[in-house]
Length: 122
Image (cartoon, rainbow, N blue to C red; front, side):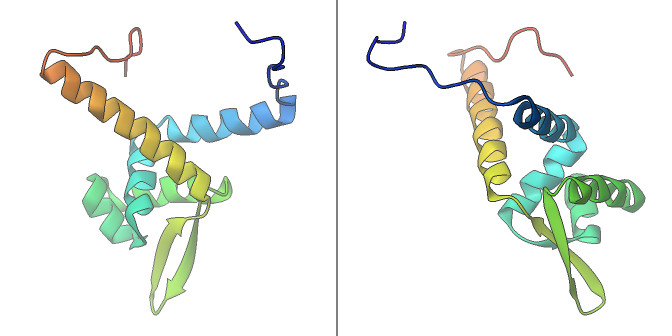
């Protein structure tokens, strides 16, 4: 219950919810989420990303193109290489928070302490 002196925050506008849903939709792919996770640690080129996430170069390139179109990552030229980096620091915060929380829950399950998210399957 919200105290009478505190008004609950206003609902976000529909366009903001739409934009958030689109960003979460892009991050719903394990491969894209992994790419953003890696880029949150620092810049990387497409071949380094492919090696790190265990994906084929063309598939990783396609994922990067989608993330780039959405404004979540950007690239810059470094000699002959395209180097990718996260373009939205708030996305890094969200990804680190979510993945960190789930990793902690997984550790808790392994030690018999806590359960993970229910009803969500891959």
